[in-house]
Image 1 (cartoon, rainbow, N blue to C red):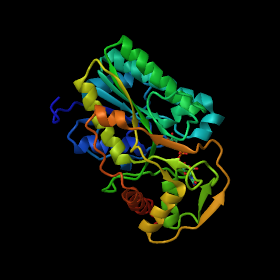
Image 2: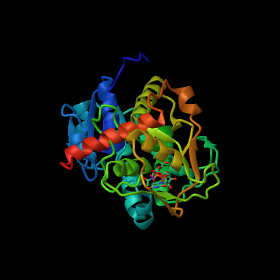
Image 3: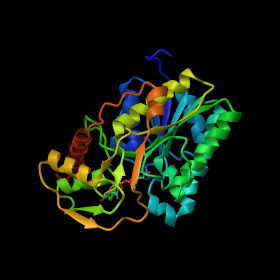
Image 4: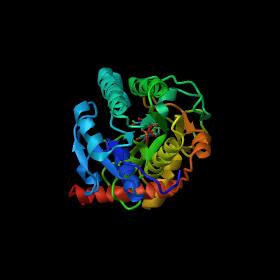
Amino acid sequence: MNRSETCPVLVTGGAGYIGSHAVLALRDAGWPVAVIDDFSTGFRFAIPDDVPVYEGDVADQALLARIFAEQDTQAIMHFAGSIIVPESVEQPLKYYENNTAKSRSLIEAAVDAGVPHFIFSSTATVYGEPEVKPLTEDDPIQPVNPYGMSKAMTERILADSSAAYPINHAVLRYFNVCGADPEARSGQSTIGATHLIKVAVECALGKRDHVAVFGNDYPTPDGTGLRDYIHVSDLASAHIEALRTLIGNPDRSVTMNVGYGRGFSVLEVLDAVDKVANRKLPRVEKGRRAGDVASLISDNSRIVAQTDWVPQYADLETIVGHALQWERKLSEIRGEA
Ligand code: UD1
């Protein structure tokens, strides 16, 4: 396929953290893009004014049929869903509804309308509690919570659907998504977010008085958890490259890890935040957080080999700098500055 070739894309959950960055990446690269979002957790300010927005549910098949017709949708990037692991343990049926049942309904609407390409937001959480080593896509899928299982089930629905119907798909298994748009047009805006970099930049701006370090006795070099932190804008561009691969290979579907293939410890991340923010954040050692694993690092050789994805923002201080820049902008938007 010619790299300048594009097709109309519908982004579900386009007002959310990752979805909004996908919208920006598509729009910046000249792809026609529309959004469906129910605004239960997303923000209108995260979507550029010239992008068509449909407020509604991804399981509303009549609405989807109308959108597909109005937008001539040729690809779906499906981000809408519920994402909080502890909540999934307390409310599993919410997760099987929002992440599995509604995805099934969306896939059915796509198949019925003949939409040829589908890209699904999956997660490294499907690997469960893996060994301390880079994970390949062929490692066992053993989710240990309903969130991971709700995503793994949708992966399976897609595999079976692509075998039966003329739709190909990419399953993208995200590692630890962080950072924000380099131009500060969007970023992680969730109130009460628990992600390490988000918590640390909030602390750097005085919105929290300390950062907790959850566990210092893991089997890792400094005893704290290792994660493969990936900049959200690189994750967004991975979706575009995955879509190009789907368009160029209509008979093939792919499952790909999206990470940088390297890990940083909690202490390394906090050192980077201290450096970028130019202050020493108070750290409080706490015990291990329930459900945390020692290490989650991708082997990303498949996406590197099978697409033209070239990450731009893998440097940890760059990631932290963008997160901090967005946190300041968010304070302005919310009138806190
Ligand atoms: C995150 C997501 C998960 C997603 C996964 C993909 C959450 C809560 N977790 O998991 O949905 O599927 O990435 O790999 O949304 N930490 C601290 N102090 C803090 C916060 C975190 O020490 O205040 C540590 C954690 O123990 C962990 C690391 O920092 O070792 C990263 O934690 P976090 O940013 O919450 O992400 P994950 O739990 O890895």
